[in-house]
Image 1: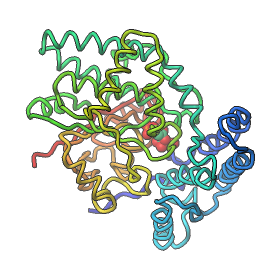
Image 2: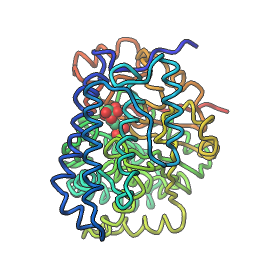
Image 3: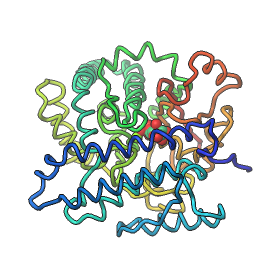
Image 4: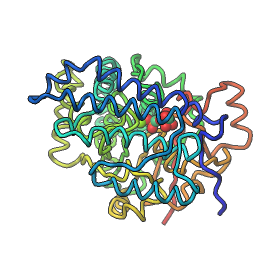
Length: 430
Ligand code: F6P
Ligand code: MG
């Protein structure tokens, strides 16, 4: 099959171009500003003097910002993280393929953007004392704190739903669809699309569902539900995306699946280091559960307790794998992360959250809008899968002929403003 070319900032009409020209430099500048502004607070968290290391992280991010803006080539990584050589081999192979080293406005957008986050991590990896520091930590914590009200609303609803479905199992399908949609729209709240600016869910996540219903361009929720009900599902996987309200919505969905008897174990997949500003790391996950435990609200404190227990009894398993932050799309998982692929083969359903996961499922290629989702996966199918994604980049597939034009007439920025979403499943009968 002839594949379409990858999205790239070389195309000034793509979202790649303003992302590399404006959005990524803003994200890098924000790191430097935040670290400088909060330097005293950061220093006070360490026993030893971290002034020099902090200065070096700030300097590296400012330098990287200049490299992006002046279209420099991607230089090899120089830290000793266990994925350094994988990245450098990728850069070498891309250099051979392209005839010169990858650069910001010429090469595939997906990998240049991933490379930026890996370079930020390099600046932290080179430290001795600040090795575990998260340059986006403050932004993620603020986004959680700003979302306490919707968190309380959705958890209260979950608590009430659990009670109702205990008494009447016929309520499960409607409730399933509701929590699936809360989980989908939770993906609106990432801090990468907003350039690190405040993008937290603040209003009731339930009240917005009706208004957003027509914005779900593909809705396979019935197919997914039938699949889950028609077999004795044991394991469901959720490949997490952002911390903050999106994580809360994912955990509520995971809790719902278990309490409705739709599976017995949930595997949650987190990132190995800070990624695309707000993606969940293990540290964010633990911090979030700890914070929930401190909120004085009947439903929130209930679930804080229940979820701690779920981790202890392994009905929730949090997994971290380097693959999610490597320069590969998911069609390459079987080759480069065979253990992860084989583990996912044991799943009854894998939910992929968010825009970046969608881009990696599709290889971030310029597929025509009408291409089928399955074609775009290019053979990636460890198990039945479903993507829950609000659109924040140019690639979107599985639409009927002419639908893209209709939506565009209604909303010029439909592909990138996060107000349109897909619940798109691929279920093959093996
Ligand atoms: O910076 C662009 C981008 O890759 C967009 O595609 C998307 O807005 C964001 O970063 C990541 O979004 P998500 O958190 O939904 O994966
Ligand atoms: Mg994200």
